[in-house]
Image (cartoon, rainbow, N blue to C red):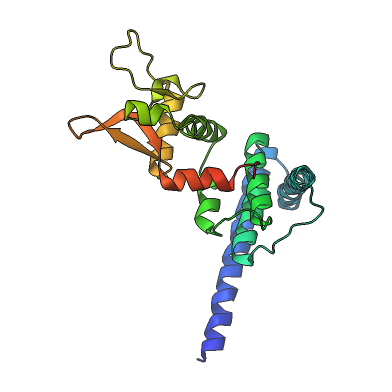
Length: 229
């Protein structure tokens, strides 16, 4: 069998699996709504199309708004397909308005020649793995670190117990120091997993799980997702 024939065969297999998966989903929805397979399939497909269309329009409007704020009518740089396609696919699946702002900012920065960015798909996959709380925490730490005071004066990072409202330096002598909520602790753990944050070491060299600061990747990620030039 030729290589071309093998390739066609693999595509056919993949297409068949996709069709089977779609039928299974339709059957599942049919069981829930108590309707025939055709009705369930139509509901599933229409809902996906409708939701994605709404998200596409929201993304377009946010993109146009960013362009206008920068005094632009069109992008000034072509975005490589290898970056633009996964970005648009992910952005048009996002329903959270706060996260959509991040996607729109990433898109406008990619298309603005005045912004020095690297077209890394990792930035897309990172944002896909984040919640709005993750983003808020990262921004709070980024804003505090950009002041160029606290981290350098105290020689450490930021205590996670005040997040997401505040990124304050660790103070071992503060009484009744708050501990992070479960939601904040989970978000910080995810940001550490994504290598956007790092734990700061204690004086004895042991990482302190309650003290963090930005990594270089975290700084670059915030920059490509910033609405400011």
